[in-house]
Image (cartoon, rainbow, N blue to C red; front, side, top):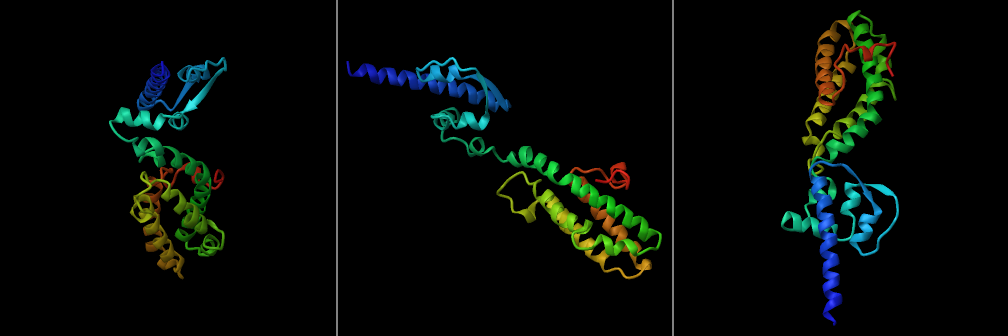
Length: 223
């Protein structure tokens, strides 16, 4: 009869929704990647396949036909924006590791240069000051790469950069560096240097880098 195709289609849709729902439940439990045979997806649509298993990530599962609708049914409404986009913590689990890989070596090298500057100023020498603040020098690295690293630590894309704690730390650090840059005499350097070191220590802690004095900032191992 005419009702039979409709019943069969409804059964297939219900089966596919159930399978997708199971996958989403596993993902919600914290599974980042699942080993799924393509045959499982084929059976859901009535077309078995002998293809080998492949790794399907959370976003790939959510991109499957009907996944958004299934997510909506599981959540009691429309699909959650957090599931569709990675959620409010997406930045904390993806952009921060990438930012660390991209900027940590550059920041480490700049901090190593600052440690050498500190030693020179403490010894009464102003020679390192000009080199530190030279164009494309350590200060420029801390200003540019340091800001980008600080921004990466925002955990919600809706938060403006100036509201991110690490960005505020970076802004404070840059202000202290400007004061240090204006020092003309060794006698005036002590106070500016102390406040700059304090601001830099706070920033390094905020972006999860080793504290000042760490061996990684020694001249011999600086990147």
